[in-house]
Length: 106
Image 1 (tube, rainbow, N blue to C red):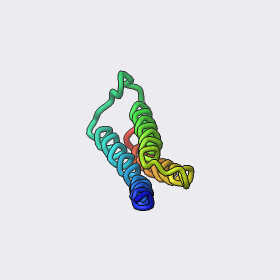
Image 2: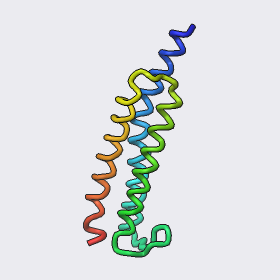
Image 3: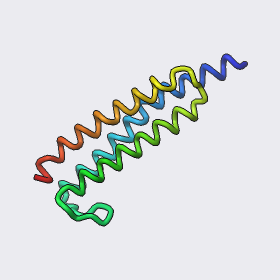
């Protein structure tokens, strides 16, 4: 019984990794599309790089989601590796979003 529960927890931990990447991708796409649509103000800031600051909040939300989802898996073995994979993937996704923003902010 316990082995079955541990197997489900491990599987959830592994499936949470692309879930975090999806959070980062959806947030990045939302910021990039809004920036190209002409939105200039983000969270009270209407500076030239306010959309890049919004992307940093997307990354922060991805990191918090990675930690929360991996803690929810209740499987300590491999925690650091799974969180590292989640955060690294989210960083790559948000970096691609930042590169896509370059023409809009420059």
